[in-house]
Length: 278
Image (cartoon, rainbow, N blue to C red):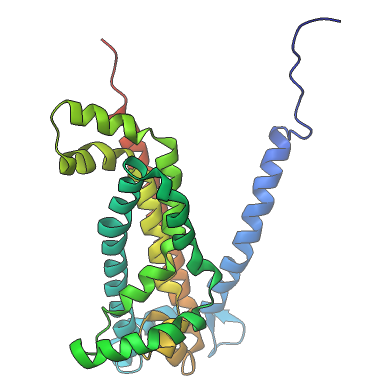
């Protein structure tokens, strides 16, 4: 019997044609609903079977400003919530995860359990627990939209945590931090100039997921009586069903642009991290 070690071939390894076929089928599954949505927004009710951009132009027509005013108010409120959630992720979640990875590794599992717990709790159950809290907040500092970012910060924890933790596991941040500290760098410098550039991909992915969750959330805002993009679409959809589909397409385009920005930022960061050897 030969002593050579043979590597077993994978049970299933699609070739070039098979890979392209799989990608094509998946792309088709995504393209069919998007194309159907776009075709629906182009339907012209005044001409039988015709298509035009009348519904797209109507969204930005000053004459329809009063009818579509809830949309712009809800969109502005959602942008404020996205900013608030981004602040929570950047200035609370990321430093905490880095601190646990460097100083308190035994707390990783309990902290992971706490971060992943909200994904198993329905939004309506969260509202039952948060309603008394927001009742007190409303009496003390008002019923503005920005306090809702605290509730949304809880809902995005599972997604943001997994994106950042995957990046932390792929980078030896302990060695990087020790090397920077041995050269005299303070902890703020270590976090901002050493660790943050290496965690850029995970942080950007966490921010993208957080923005997607905030822009698509309806239950919490509706039950707590706070207007956001989804509640505004629900109201306006009763008057014009085309508007909700148009804004959904715009939201998909916005998310696609964010994905391109993340990919571009990660590529630039990777090229900057490679230094030619002398």
